Image (tube, rainbow, N blue to C red; front, side, top):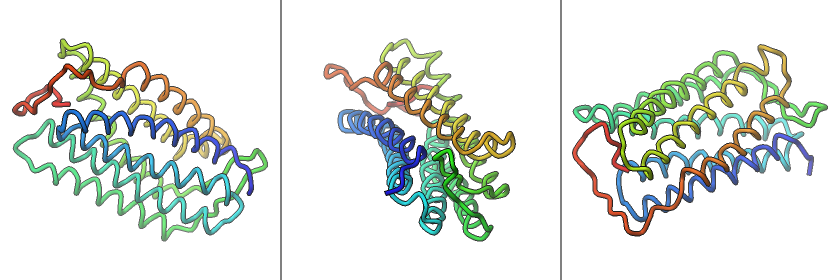
Length: 245
């Protein structure tokens, strides 16, 4: 076993995202809405990605081939999770368009990012700081960040709208919390894909950013993503600006 701060950071992220996944499982089990189901699917995929990367970072930090496999699987799983968000965005804002259009566009971008990750040479390695440098692939990283940007930003905007128009404290808190989580996640991705290489901050900077994101996620989940009250009843309303949680 080769210890790495990257594995530790992703382990913390796995527990944080795992808690959020459990919250969305609670929402889906009680409410049975499409929105709660889609959030459960997407966040669950992100949780699975965190788990794989944590195991590899903790036990295989010096194995170059396994590290390469981790980067490739991360590109695919992140693209798949964001594709579910693409489906959700169309479902919420464009009811006359098939949500599968949003899924397909994002999924194809994710597949492109995965293919570029495979074909463009890169050399991940464990730095002296104890952080894993995943290698720099400018074109592949650009596509991976684009997948995050075109899903996280619109969805955060939708959630912000929901926070502003809703009169239900439970819905406002949940919308605000998820909007902030998407924003923090995008900033973390920006560090991972670009800033650590462009600003020469070293791989440890991404681990610190992920650790801060995970701690923020724990706090926001406990404060804003509470289990659904047993007395509340939710039904799926017709398409409108209000999110049918």
